[in-house]
Image (cartoon, rainbow, N blue to C red; front, side):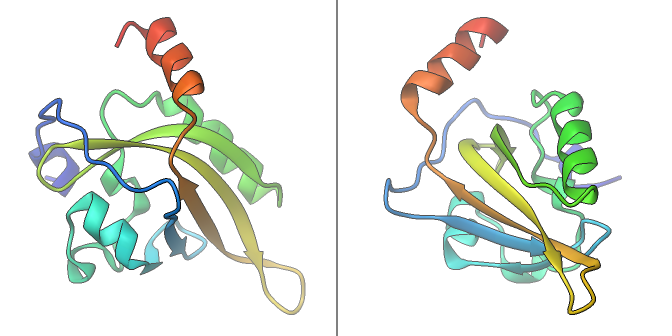
Amino acid sequence: MSIRTRIQPTGRESHFGEDEFIVSKTDIHGKITYVNEVFLRVSKFDEGEVLGMPHSMIRHPQMPRGVFKLMWESIQAGREIFAYVINLCSDGDHYWVFAHVTPTFDARGNISGFHSNRRKPDPKGLALIEKSTGR
């Protein structure tokens, strides 16, 4: 059983500041290779719990899989993508982000991993998402 299937959403939201960025890096398979302190604080995971794990471990069950399909198609093709995403904390709380995901390239121009910077989402954009999904 994966860690994500054991975590039950609480409906409570975890927050971070307007001037903070959540940062993570993965290898080409989506396994986490780096997270910053803001990632750890907001997601409520310890570094040892996330390094080497699939980034999907923080996927909230209400997040449509189609968004991640589009994301993977884009970044594996060498393009960046921006998306509103709801993530799951280790205790079942959630947090919304506006994610910017980009491929990382090696010296030969091959994709060697992925990098994501997430910031606090625009409340107006979030309101539209929540209205259209009935959340």
